[in-house]
Amino acid sequence: MKQYTGQLKTLGAGSSSAGRGDRYTYIEIGDHRIKNVGVSDALGGILQEALHNSTPISIWIVSYFGKKIIAGVSRADGTVFRAKMTGILLGSVVAVIACGFLYAGFAGNSPFHAVVGLVVGSWVVYFANVNRQLFSIPANDVL
Image 1 (spheres, rainbow, N blue to C red):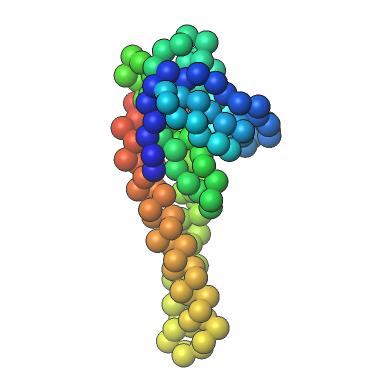
Image 2: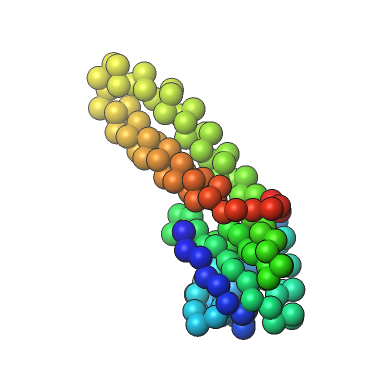
């Protein structure tokens, strides 16, 4: 997870998808230009507000399956907002349950179940890392 701080200068051309938020071709904040960034509808509103007010902000960006997503935004007044990202939490639960079921395959010495168990197990580690990053954002509010 990376944190960028500064005045939000530009939100590049974006595409919108109902219920999935926006994806900007780039965002300029401070001296940084971040390409191809996604943001939820709720956090997108806070970005728009910061762009019009010319106030400094901080944004936290996580990588989720290779895509950059804004996970948190801090306004100049110190209020920090974090995205819900319930899909990531749900993915964690599903991966853990699947690992439990596939563990039985290890006991039967099935090579297929062993490989699938290792793949799903790596998903558990991946989701745990993304969740750890999300919850490390010192949020006052979750949107």
